[in-house]
Length: 80
Image (cartoon, rainbow, N blue to C red; front, side, top):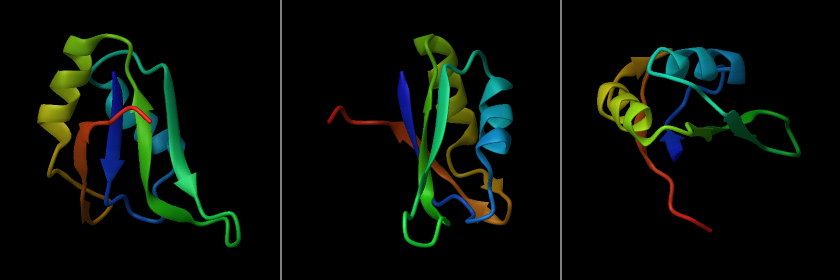
């Protein structure tokens, strides 16, 4: 299941995000979307967790949690 994580701190790294979600299960990929011009985070990213049960547990536990001073929002990403 691909999860959309919004309202990330601009200082949060992909490693930190991966470790946060790995506490709930296996993470296939983790990407923070970056601004090409400034190479700074746009404040959102995606985490792909292959097992739906683990992804749902992570979504329920981490949604509205404060990470690096920001309350993040976690939901299922809509397909393109």
